[in-house]
Amino acid sequence: MQLLTPAGQNVVNELAERYNLSQDAVIHMLTAVNIGGGSMAQFNCQELGGSGQWMRGGMTMVGDMFNHGLKNTVDNLCSELSNALANTQMFPVIPAGSKNSNQWWPTDLGSPSSSGSQNNIRYAVFPNRLAIQHNGEVTVYDTLDNNIGGVSQQQGGDTSLTFSSQYGTIAVDTLPVVSGAGVSVQKQTNFIQAAHAPNQSDHGDNNNVDTTEFTDQSSSDEIIALIEKMAKLHESGALTDEEFNTKKTELLKRI
Image (cartoon, rainbow, N blue to C red; front, top):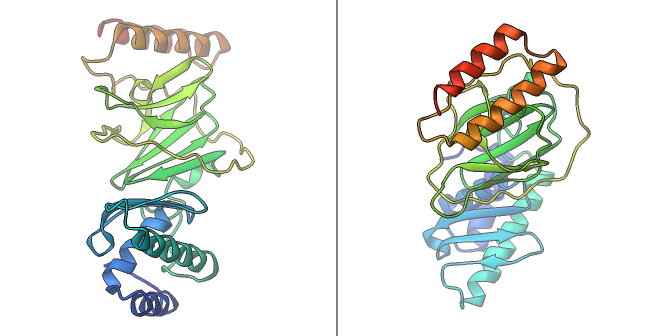
């Protein structure tokens, strides 16, 4: 069960009694709303009809789609939980950089220009860096010269995470990995982008271009695209001749 502060436990007890739900069900919904930044939630709670979605001021979806009473219950409960998260310390303070913290990314990245989450995946965008958390594990990617827009789960047969940039739709797993093991997601998920915050200075090292995450399934076009991006880094002086030639040779062997 999720740890709560004494004040948070009091809120859960009161809501469980008022909505005639178990404490576990209320905590499940509280956790879902918290993961959604207080403005949305995806949940799977048997006491509330199974799987569903909630968005503040938007559409509420429940398993029994014609049960309007259940929809109202979910909407009202999530709204109250969102207000509680905004006004009450519901959870114990977790140090920044920890996987269960709202600031789950490595602290040396600073503050993200945008972030989002849904289900068990979260992302945060920084200057030249993209952090992805999947099942509690964080991977940081070098975004090279991409200007990242929204991050999403590729639809159809390709289940890799993608993001939009000035070059079009790019697969996340074609980016060099700065830290972490890389993300492989077998579930279709769309992220909702959060409000933008002021950009911070880049704490990363553009020289750290890691090509070890490419697999045999990487397409030739993706590899060529990365070589072209590394060439731009080489031209700007971010990569030495030796670094560029070594990584280019490594990538060409995978075509």
